Structures are given as C-alpha cells and as structure tokens.
Length: 305
Image (cartoon, rainbow, N blue to C red):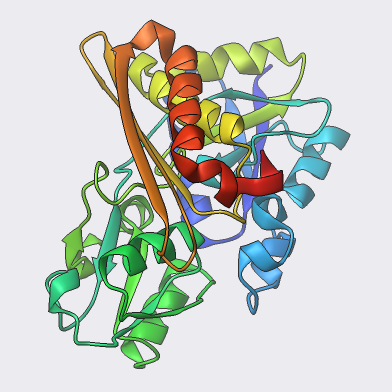
C-alpha cells in the first residue's frame, strides 16, 4: 500500500484537519502518496435549521461514509464531536491521532468575558449544550441559532447579527484565527462536547494496514480521554437533542472525568465529576453516567436512554 485517498468535508476547517493527518502519515512513511478528496455533505447544505431539528450529527458523515463503504476513499477524517456513537455496519474508528484545545470560547468585539455582555445580549450558537450552559449562567441572554463554517459565522458577527459568538477553540486555532478570541471557558466549568478538539479517522472494518498506520500516530492519553468521553455519551444515550457536555483529563496514571446534562433553557442542570485509574476509563464513564441519571438527568434524557 503506497497510495491513500482521504475523504473529508469541503469546509476550510475540515480540509485543514485532513491535511494535518496527511502530513503526519507522510512523515511517518515517506513512500505514501496521499490525496485529499473534498465531499459536500447534507449538513453543509442545510444551514437554516439547528442540528437538533434535523438528523443530528450524522448529517456531516453520511455521504463520506457512503464513499468509504464503496471503496472510493480509503479513510475519512472527521471532527470527533460530529461523529455519532453508533457507526454504520462495516465501518469503525481506527483512532484519534490529534487533539487541539478542547475548550469553548467567547468571541465578542466589545466584551472581554461573559459578564461584560450587556443585558439581553444576543449570542449566536447552534449548540444546545452551549445554550444550556450560557442560560444557566446568564438567563437574560438571547440565544440565536447559527450554523455554517467559522468564517461565515464571524462575518455575521461583524455585520451585527449578534453581539457575541460561542465557538470551539480548536477550529479557530486550526484556521489561525485565535486572535479574535475574547476569552476561554474552563473545560471543567463550561463543559465541551464529547471529543471536542479531537480528530477521528474512520476506516472500513478489516483494513488492518491502515488501522496500524493510524495507531502509530495516536497518543495514549488523548485516546483514553476521548474514549472515556464517548463511552459516557453512549451510556447516557444522548445525541444532539439533549444538552450533554463532558471532559476527560489525564494526569500521570489518573483520569478525571467531568460531565453535565441540562435542559436547553438552563432551568435544570446536573453536573458530576469522578476520578480513577486511567486504565479503568470505561468503568469510570459508566459510574459517572449512573450518578448523573440518579441525580435527575434521567428525566431530561427521557426516551433517549
């Protein structure tokens, strides 16, 4: 195997992420010839509705996964937070080779932090998780759904459609736009999405040679963090219809896992944290999910469990 085709979304951010994987694979094996194929997904075409009102995260993957299953591409690079817990038959995640800053950030031309925003300020975000945590802190804020690529959202901010945006630090940093960040939210306080900032490489089941290549690029602690976060998401049965946030942090041989489940309007909010040996990340995720459910999150999640 000396030629690979990577499939990814056609956005500037997705292409930058795919290029990161491409360059790393080429550095690892100088004989590889790698092509990046841009694929426009349904999620990129439908921009006038929040994800929770349509088909959810899978909108960004279905066309790419179709090409992968039929053999037109050899692997796909995704933002892990866009990848549903359940994958189509015949596909698997080969690994998580890189993770950028997992934090959410405030982008506001006239505010240094959330407290500085004026009463009833209009804030743009397409995420129910972000909306719930914003309203839990500032119930006066007017949250307006916004989708589209990062540059489009920033243009809407400059045009005055809202007074602030909440975005992922990872995307801004990968695009070299971190200068527009007003402040970073602590991932232990304002919890990010499961896998936020991490890249996932999806392959066909049985492609052992490609899987081995991706495994060589993985960092053990990053892998444990994101596997714990996705395990917790799976145990809660949540997608993008209920606000769920979580963050794993590995220090030495210990994993600290934090998570929240909230109502979209911020009226109910459950948050728990658990620590343990990092090798037990799966059990830690399960126990933390149980604690959230027992605290009252089960009613919010309802039939999704």
